[in-house]
Image (cartoon, rainbow, N blue to C red; front, side, top):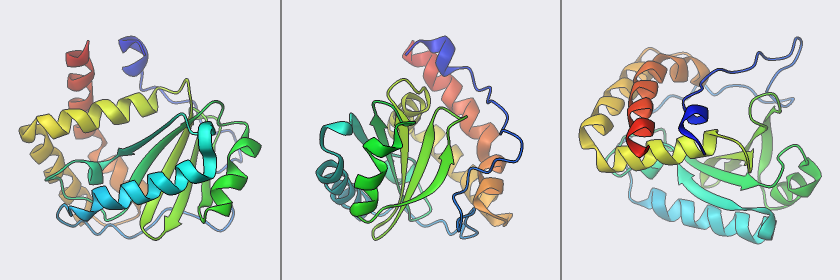
Length: 194
């Protein structure tokens, strides 16, 4: 993935009248942040196994991303999993398999890199599905790897997360409040990766 594309954070507008939320879902108001838990890596492995069993070769990549994937980083106790499929707009190729494995489709954003999000109640997880050509999974990986090897930025991001959670509201507002710090770190990490 070329650097220019990774650094392009422009987003298409949400189509008029469209909502990313599947009926019955909306942004969570639980902004509880906890210290890092070693079991999160085990929870990811269990989820990855379930996803692999359900999707087989349709899952091109399955990765532990987000704050629970970074040792020492406090996080909401919800495992973020990144899954790449050949074409996320071809829902028939993977949605029924996810649903049969106990995952529930909560978000459908075809206008934003083909993003879909499935929720899992146990272990609690958000599974982000993108097509093979999307830039966002590459950003997730670069950000995770940077925070794992740069404790000063990890701690700065932890402070931003705690401050964003303390302000209350729902998860989309929380994400917006910490976005400036996240982007500053991510741009540095992308540029360093070349």
